[in-house]
Image (cartoon, rainbow, N blue to C red; front, side, top):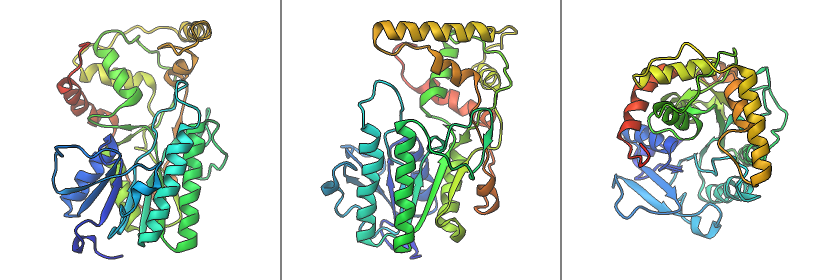
Length: 336
């Protein structure tokens, strides 16, 4: 592979301004690499003028022309992230699947040598009570997971056809300062005293620190054995929701309640939420799906990532929580 330090911009990062993308960019810059960031909107006053900001929309292939010129490595971290019922039908296919198809076409045209896709464990089947590793081959059931799985297949097929070094990383939910989604919401509601004390159900949920995910990205770029492979990326811990809840309470400086709401009550409240949704025709904050995320398992193991990629995570959630709380405290919130 050409040494990207001899080019002004050797790395193209899609989703460069997102939570994961920002950490990828910062790490590459610290290593002296030139970065081009691809996004739909170019900030009028970019925070870091050392990044070449390329304005392009993955769903509009004409806007991607030239995005991969003089690029050795593409790190594809963009995509429609949230899987909720209020999203327009087809949005994941449009952004994640077709957007990846358009980006791949530009990569092939420009002779990109390595293509790393930061996908999601949701591209795998739901684990249920099992703990899945990379041998799991069944398809996911929802549009979000299917679009990511199909995008993965496009990338791997392009690698086989062209000889491009293509690798898929499927991270579990990613935590760290500035993370979004369920973890950020849980931290906020605990801080407000509005999150119910969760019982210890013995469930197993996998996650990964954003710093470890970035290290996996670097390994996927550098390790020849990663070509054509798909890896789960987790921190190796099995978190119960009670452990997450207790850790957040302590990091926020709050005492951990000794009592908890019984599981039957939580599940009954979820069914009540379902009924309310059916009447209102729109989602409510708590329903059976929310209840399942709190009480059930979603466990994955990075078996191949450890053996062939050489991935060994260095962090667990408790290590990251102080910085997560500090960032949360510094973020303006009109409701706090």
